Image: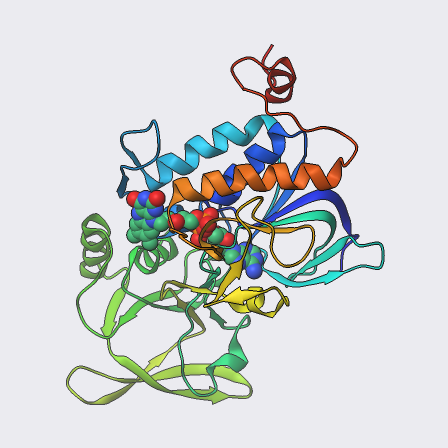
Length: 345
Ligand code: FAD
């Protein structure tokens, strides 16, 4: 457990709406910390459709998911939010002084006066390979999180998956000073969803004997002295075979898990947080919910709707944080105060 971080505002979720929440809080003169389970910002835009076009962002006739995320990062830069990536928020509790204590699964603690939940459809978590007994080796020989070369350097590596990240992991593991002793790509059939250029590179590496592809469905494990020795496979011919390994890296994609959001005691309807449309406050004072995670009459899960919600939630937050100050509507075009906050001379 690290020293608690005290803040006026914490945002859970660095998707497009969480990022725009940072911007709107910044305009109100509120610095914030942002936590996301993913190791990068952008939420669904970055994770599910980085190269696909979006046509309904006001004033931007066309941009891809990753271009929108890059523009939002540029827009929030003047407010210097502190990002805490790769951390899943696991618990929220009310302190006796009415602040909210927010904890992450990796041990960070925040004590915040206001909380904006922009958790989308939940935290994106790596899909696990479901096999009896395999979970005992997680974090030691079996890894589902983002591939890291130090795990497999000099080891016999099996990568399970058929997408970009699986093939990229294999190609990374066959070269450099952290190369694996051997690399096997495991997928149930010789068909891949990865980008065509990665498939070509993988096939070339197989042809050159630098790695191999193994078709099969894992059905069991062989262990010895507490170590995972091999996976048992059912191959496409219907035969069982053993695939020896030191390290198993699974790259089976991510799935959003609502998980902890549902356990925080907030009013919910059909897995979404109920908010009022005046300031997008939830049933708990000081907790706002914006973007795909909230629900109200007429709710539409669109980025531009989330941007509106984040704007009004920031007005709600500043009203709580500065009850004695009158919050006037100011325009970014003409307000010298907003120019100062935006760092414009
Ligand atoms: P998200 O983008 O889901 O981000 C939420 C973030 O919160 C995630 O990064 C997640 O890891 C994090 N998180 C959740 N729980 C926790 C936790 N406990 N701890 C830490 N972090 C957590 N919308 C449009 O307006 N126009 C379009 O053209 C469009 N196209 C789309 C195409 C596809 C294929 C998909 C899937 C969606 C599309 N959408 C589109 C919908 C749009 O992407 C969503 O409305 C938008 O991403 C919602 O943003 P958000 O910030 O609320 O949530």
